[in-house]
Length: 539
Ligand SMILES: *[C@@H]1O[C@H](CO)[C@@H](O)[C@H](O)[C@H]1NC(C)=O
Image (cartoon, rainbow, N blue to C red; front, side):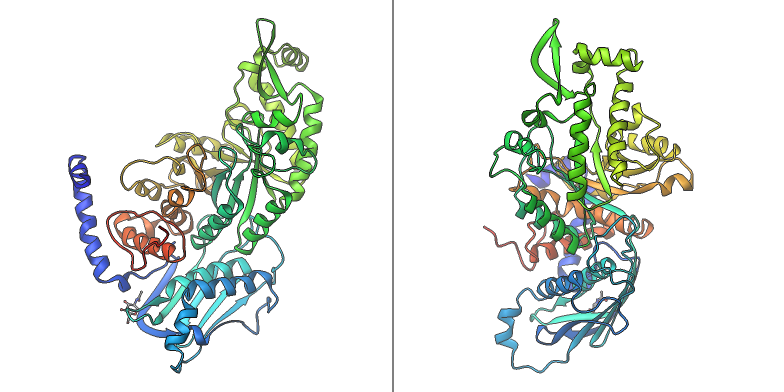
């Protein structure tokens, strides 16, 4: 039935090509061992060296600014040892009698930034050189070293007898974009902390570096605020079980840090705030019908001074809980219907001289919130809607492009960068949308800088983001929905565009990387017909 479908859908040419590719892949699996996302400069040779868990060491180079005791690298060594040798316990007994040459991976970093957080300027550049019995990994920062360790772990492979090898290799690598994010939505469905941590692991395997935590929205408010505990006790799906306590949040942030991943919190307002109203009286605008309150509530009430006092206190807390220099303020999809119906809001409009123009009111609100967070030394990120009504938003604000599939977002990139604003692209990467077939092609072939504009404008694209909106996603299907489809975006955002312009070349590599994810316990869904040496054993 499936084959019939493909033939009649007119995509059979491509499908046949993949069948052919599959045969090649499956016969010569070792030949396609590679690294995903593709490094900038990569040469490998057939010269291979044995690697054995009994005699394998990560060591700090003598010149390295970071030494033993560096939390990020000590943790990374432990993690990568287990990732490289998932079966090292069982292998011990069988192969224990053999004599092995040691293999040493020597890490050298220029800066000992072991206790800091990764930020927008952190270098992730690294060089990796593998020769007999030794690999040298050099990076400017510990974050670059973590990326290089991921690459090294992907270079090690097992032959048919279970012995590990790594080939002679030279790699110089640097990401194309500084911001490579994944958005998880924990309001429409609650995601247990464990599901978030697992996603952070998979993000690191893909070299993603920002976890955009869309933590609250209309349906629920799971963030347990220390300043306003009623927000979650009344606004969460359940006040005890479906919340993120302060220690949960700290755990996510410190876990992410060790992988070199920033945590960008989003507290979206003035729309998307229904759940906030449950625990904070007078925050939302009462909607009116026929001169009396109708009993329903609209966006945050921009006419009351108490609103801004509340927001100032909430963002003060949020700014100290989340160490990242960015904060996401939302600002999307504000419906004016309720504001228009409310007599107090109309009086405020007259007082402010906004006339009948509710976009001015919205601009006033957002600017007030941006001023609050700027005073807290945060860079604001807002959804692109804000630019539509407020072209004079402070210049260091980042606009997040989510509208317009498949082509319209290019016009938006062009328009917004022309005003000198920095942008972040999400529109083509709404991965919660699914369809039959290999839709990773569509994610992979996006060209974030291919819009009409000057070179200066193109530099204003700081990166991109995969969004997993939560209407139909919870912990049961999060992982297979994300992976390996998000891996296509990972390569688009990390690797050189020209070297990764061909989906047919990417396919066997991605197929292989997906098997690698399975081997690491990530329940990544299949791309197409085929098999992995180690299949998922979960059922
Ligand atoms: C690694 O070495 C093996 C054995 O010599 C060879 O078959 C394979 O093609 C090499 N892989 C790479 C990526 O160079």
